[in-house]
Image (cartoon, rainbow, N blue to C red; front, top):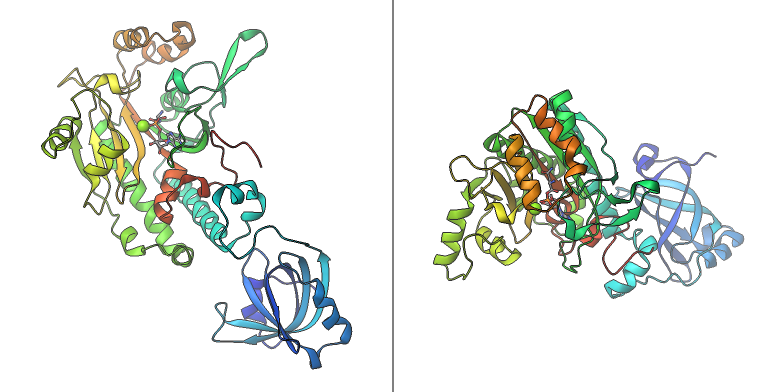
Amino acid sequence: MNYITIDELPRHIGEDVRLRGWVRRFRSSGKISFLVLRDGTGEVQCVFVKNEVSEETWAGLEDASHEACVSVAGLVRADDRAPSGVELTATGFELLGASAEYPIQPKEHGVDFLLEKRHLWLRSARQIAIMRVRDEVIRAIHDFLHDDGFTHVDTPILTGAIGESAGTLFETEYFDHGKAYLAQTGQLYVEAAAAALGKVYCFGPTFRAEKSKTRRHLTEFWMVEPEAAWMDSDQNMDLQERFVSSIIQRVVLKQREQLEALDRDVSKLEAIVAPFDRMSYSDAVDLLQKQGSDIEWGSDLGAAHEAQLVEGREKPLFVYDYPKGAKAFYMKENPDDPRTVKCDDMLAPEGYGEVIGGSQREDDYDKLLSRIREEGLPEDTYDWYLDLRRHGTFTHSGFGLGVERLVTWICGLDHLRETIAFPRMMTRITP
Ligand code: 4AD
Ligand code: MG
């Protein structure tokens, strides 16, 4: 008999089938045994009645330990009480891969222990739900951008130029060329590609040697970075709000079951529909000061400021046009107030903070060069980037959306570490 998968069971009611997978739970009264099997497509309860199976099968159930890999044969029955709508009246059992003393028990474990056993922790129902949501988010990202006319361009992970800030670089020796860095962003490269293809995006792992142990920072995270010719800062925010609304509504539509398994209040996500409110940095500082904050104009907003600004809001808030000194060298000087740059951060509600950072890029050769000099960046490694302003400079903008930040918010989690299969943090490199 061929194997089928658990998600196929509803089409086989009344038939004898064979399944294989891992033992989620097993309990026995001595006369009847219940084995919950999962196989990556779902879970099903298999019921063994001592008087109705062979002695050999009944004896074999001794090996049905937590997370053992097994094969079960039986008759598929409709069962309204079962979450999957079916149950298996089992007739056969075979051990495929034993599991003795599975380390993760159905009790509370500390998160350090669980991270140490991350390769096994992934099998838990909660982690499976999160991985399914993440997968949906990633598909939604690609679909939205392709439907909107963007072309996917892969950018290098080993780079010679600093993308964001010198303080958080992972360095390595690169043959005879001195130092190479792990990419903090693909942005500089998608800017070059935008002059070839118009609307482009890169999507890959990015690296930041952040010496911060916050719940919002990983050292390796995935970022999608759309970049478009002719787009200004306002249009950049239009795109961002359409993008985020569309991803979230797709997850709500397609992964509601997983969100419910995570106890997420789905109505909070249903409210995330474009447009989102926009507030200038200067207005944000005024507001914070009126509310008693001692923030001064010119300093970057911290996580606490962001939380205060979004407090009581159902939807994300854009804060735009930050002071030059708080932002990266490549952002366009604001013609209306040269102390500021044309940029925006999208701050998510419920305290999730910045999920997107975006900007219009400096397209003036002299201004860009002087910013590179002011920041003390090695000029020769940016020569190719300056070429984009020497040869047909153009209005363009883009942004970076952090996948783990978005998935954390969508799933309603309190830490980024569960949103990626194998998180890389300052304190952890294994498994
Ligand atoms: O604001 P950031 O640093 O912007 C850039 O890297 C630009 N080059 C993007 C662009 O314009 N193409 O990072 C963008 C987003 C943040 O809003 C956040 O969601 C995420 O990347 N992010 C992190 N996520 C996890 N861990 C970290 N250490 C992160 N740093 C940034
Ligand atoms: Mg940022």
